[in-house]
Image 1 (cartoon, one colour):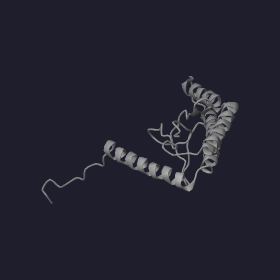
Image 2 (cartoon, helix red, strand yellow):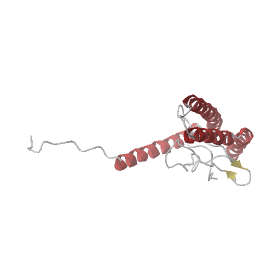
Image 3 (tube, helix red, strand yellow):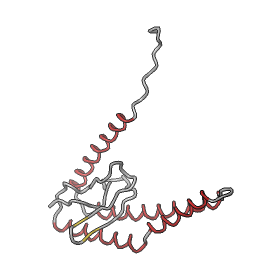
Length: 171
């Protein structure tokens, strides 16, 4: 049985990070990733789509995702992000000089929250990685290589290199 939706945008064999992945599992319909953040442009990529998982693997992954979802809900980092973002907006739209020290402090708080969230998502990705076989990881990795190649091609089309200037006299 194929999993239609899941958490991971970038679960791979060694060394690829997962950025901004939100864990979200719905017990009624399997797995549901609610967004992948800035990690891979054009996200919606479901790393486990097309990968045949055993019942045991599906159960293990569902448990991991449910635990990650509960942890995300308990911490409610989104509310903290919104609060800090509003404070930064207030500092930048208030009359008078910008309190750069206050903005810098708020930026640091935001960076700390992002690092915490990233660490949690990497832990979840690592736990799912450990459930998968070498062949499954290789399949995921091969698909990701293709996706990155396509994204590179798209970038080259959208942002072509400037044409080299040629001397008008033909020299």
